[in-house]
Length: 111
Length: 266
Image (cartoon, rainbow over all chains, first blue to last red; front, side, top):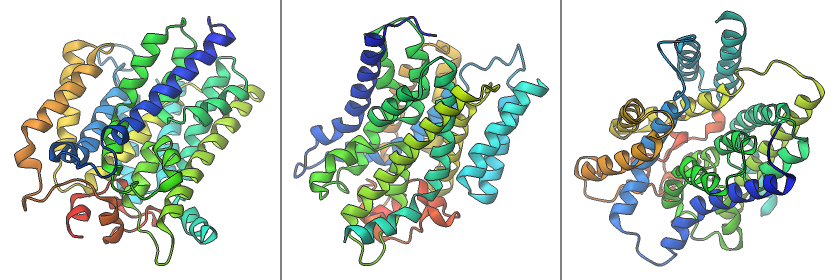
């Protein structure tokens, strides 16, 4: 359940929607058509996506504690499954759904 | 013309169909579990339309009302979209009245598709791009509504279903890894974030990681920029004209991101 009123919930969603749109639209406002995009910005546009996805992978694992609970083992096993299966088949559904099912079984039934 | 673009776009979006239906269901189930009706899932997927952020949004909606931290959290989680936008400046230039929707709907997956896809002969690129973006959002909306309804009707133990998001990022990471000419940016992203997580802790590391990554990439500009001196900006019209095969065929590592080759061999 939620401690927020319906109006607050709607406002929260509106803020998220606005902020999301802001992150998507800002580059187009900063560098409108016809204006030369600075070389450094184009450079960042080319290398940042690689670094950011790496960052997001770590972000997903931020709450793992290797000294308590299941010590991150379910995450490790399921991640290895996703990476290996994806390198093997390159099938988005198989990798994502398969990995999630493996993880759910591990946290619900094994660990 | 539109019909032809629609027919060409549909098969290209099939990998995202699978991923989005599944992720959407995971999101809908989690939201339903917190006591929200499917209507909430529908409106969130229509107006927010950001996969990972909608998972984070569930925790924001179930905590005390806090507009400022909601705003900041969204900016941080979605900051990577800034860079997607930067690499889409040129490709979106000729989108005309469709441009606002293209910008709004630029998710991780749509971005990967638009970067890696080859526009078929004789198909209008503008509408082809538009239908890819539109189909992707429809899948996401459908998935989240199915999940929310299923979650309300059939209660089941969904513990661990949030791993779908981790799996998604891992898959994108693998795709990018295989397409990249240098692994340094990806390794920097992982390494710097890991160090920041260990130093600053799970609640505070994200901003430091972003700053660190930005600084490191700027410092390494000379090494990472294209050796021939031309710019390395992913130019979508370039990669679309290149030898990049469609992700729909299931075996294309290039599909995840526009690689440097695509931008320079035009």
